[in-house]
Length: 301
Image (cartoon, rainbow, N blue to C red; front, top):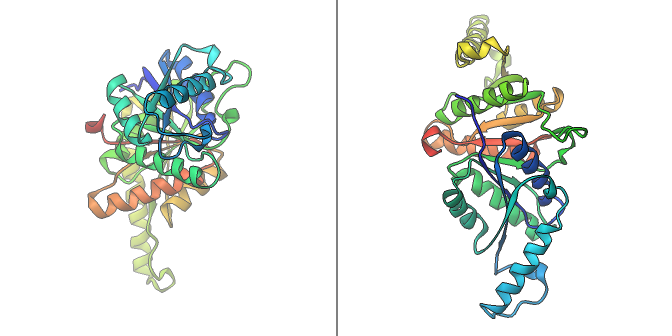
């Protein structure tokens, strides 16, 4: 099934890093003819970026709302697309979750970095919470959009997409998104599964070594089987099985092969694997050289 983004939200705290979400949002909105919302949530417990704040529930909030809207309207690039400013007050992750329901959002774009120090940590934790809780995919960005956007036409330039697979429902849904985006932009699709290495590989007997190689081959065949026959008409997925720490191998693979996007499921099999995959997704998001699209299960969408 083709994926189509119709309602897209960019979250920003007006820092240099967070404002990087906006070029991504503009490019995606133009490519999919989507409605773009640019959102700033004012956390009243951390409003120092607005100067002195004295609790006048009506007057002060209106002043902050006006200032935030003015900042949004001055943001470069938004003149090239239809967009709507959204200013909310409250907990950032909670307010964005409410917006997902109100606006029927298909995609939220958030940065893994914000203002320096504490605010940077706060924004990072907001993005992690969004990834774990939102019913729609989250595109986590930290790098400038130059490699993602064609500098001449302003369109999206996706040539290589990496999909991490652990055979969970979320991972298989991530593959659906990866294949759809690859078809949309005629990109390569790389499918990667990372297996835990033997505890003492140097002590494996010849028979155990053979069994280990057969296991790797079986996992690779299973990866290949996930790709629908119709997808092979327009692409040749590259299935790879590696050994090691999942997040390290995913990031290293993305760096070595110059991936333009990584697509990951949010949750894995069962409670323990869910926690492990969540940790993997968080670590990849923080270290990835390219945007990471975090996708939940189909039932959550």
